[in-house]
Length: 103
Image (tube, rainbow, N blue to C red):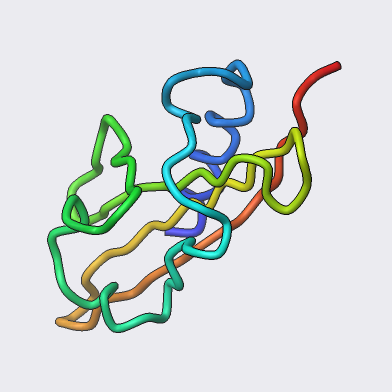
């Protein structure tokens, strides 16, 4: 899951700053807490401001949220979350990165 999250971040970092997949989906204060109880119940598509990765590997769910101008003006904070079921237990990995608008 960690490798998939890192790979997704690398893919998102290569995209143009204004790519539609990096459109604002939430306010910075409403980024999903990966430890919140809402994360325990599927489906992810019902969570506010979630963009599902176009390809979902078997047994994994990859998604992200984008907060424009957070924590600073002309930046985007992107939270990538990967989750999978492991012997009946839902495991979650989350990474945040901040991207600045190119000058």
